[in-house]
Image (cartoon, rainbow, N blue to C red; front, side):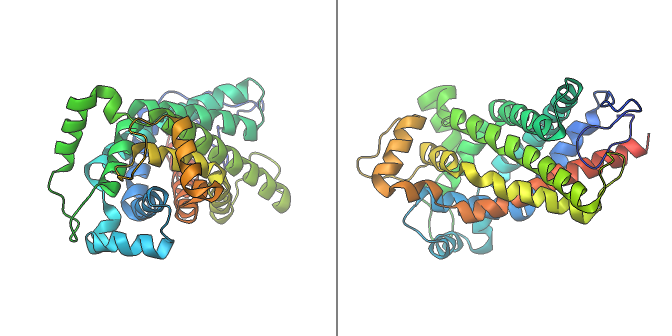
Length: 310
């Protein structure tokens, strides 16, 4: 990458403008590694709990966790991790950091503030990762959580068999069901996470008196900024519930067989009212904080480390 980086966002050159970063495979490797770490630790348990609550909107968090536990104990909270979450994590993180990093440089060069450049680059990165790999991975993760399984968490058919059957029956659209909702979610997710994290960083800089971009924030302050960005980005929970409903395998009388974003939203409102759009928001806040700390703070820290080695 060949440059020093500030506490968040692109590096600043001697003329005060963002320094040009060389396209580096390090960005790709950092994104994949951080995402694999995130999903294999706290990420997947939060994801499974959120999905269970959003797909079964009559369940409380305690009830959802008991159901998940009944499907394999602690391993029940890691349903869909192998292979789908690992496939998704090893690709979407690379796509996100590569795309967002390059876009953020371009937007800063065009004169956007760190906050608006963060929002715009996060949106672009989120859309790119949704259509690149997340459509079928997110769908299959949801299938694993919502399809029928035995009391020990076992299923009559393997995950790969289910994926092949869906593809044979419905083609590429079948295994990418809900991808447009995923794109909307990812666009708003990472636009919010990067943008709100950058905004929090700027606020912390004013609070601490470190207004010079060359002054680095402490790790604690940067983690706090990432956590704030992750928590506040959960304002878009309704589109996440819609996405899960579109991909859910839960059988219910009267439920439309083929759902669009509009028909899924209508179905959720008919069944659960406005509160149905916010089912699973608590574990999603936890997920959002953890993801953003890993990908925003972690991404900045690791890229800064490699930059300093140049």
